[in-house]
Length: 219
Image 1 (cartoon, rainbow, N blue to C red):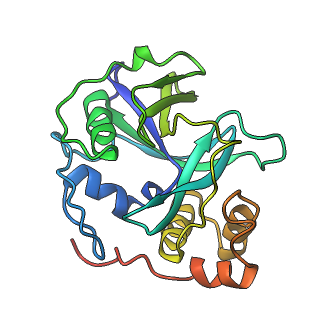
Image 2: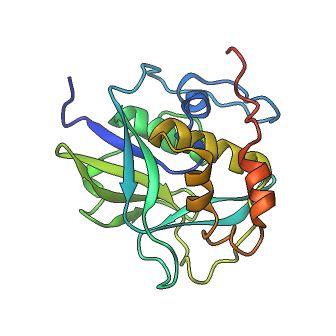
Image 3: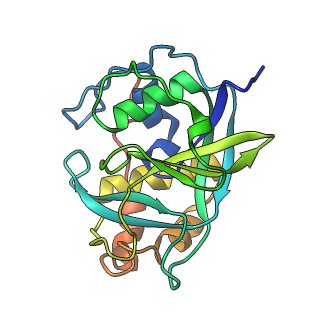
């Protein structure tokens, strides 16, 4: 059962892969990293999971200490020459679970509340200067708002950064799981994205998306 106390969290980066998202939900330290996630106060699984396609564009920027390269960001109003249509995975979460996810995205402990009504319809709410501290309303599914996180900066002016091979492998496996895409469709989607187009050759990208994530171990 869902109520007004639920939101869809639209994951468009590494969290499209449920095994990665589960570190936010259940807590723990992903293999190959030094960061430990405290997990949700309520670790119940999402009430539903669905494939989503968001309007706007995906691009890669910043320099992640976890991923050692650029990471994915969502641009609702992208540069005019950027490809549009962002593949995502929707997790139906309680509002408190979404609040705990937001806190962990910004390296804070869960505990704060969140009111989704603060986010304007079709707009965004910047809660701080952090890279994933802007909450954006990307539409509705079955009358429930679809919310995601992005950065407060202008996507046209930010410096693009090359994502690492292991980050691309994570996203590729998330696309396979969420959308049922094969490798060719994954490469077709990723290849023109800002941050990939000028930093990865097609052979290199193909090798990257074929790699393992390091998360396919029993938890």
